[in-house]
Length: 132
Picture (cartoon, rainbow, N blue to C red):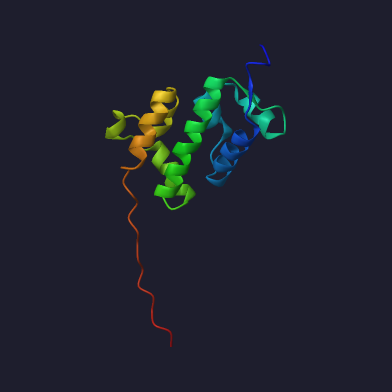
């Protein structure tokens, strides 16, 4: 592996890992999207070298864009983001966004487009008794 072709993606890896942690998602999701071993992601999380091929770095950037879009769409609520990733969508041909993201850049683009049209969870309002 030639180090000259590898890109230092430490800041992007840090952002992706923070998004995963904020939504209580496993590192396995990022490893599957980038098609690299989860041990390598864990090593990067522990401060190891965050070297990625240019194609992997592009997928990492798309992953971050998708996750940020999902977070904004669902009001930064981790349980809604996790549920959205696990719910099959007609827009993705019956696949879940998590499955579609593992199919490369095209899958990430499809999820990015579909994220704007995902159904929002119903907000429940409870009647609060008046203060006495």
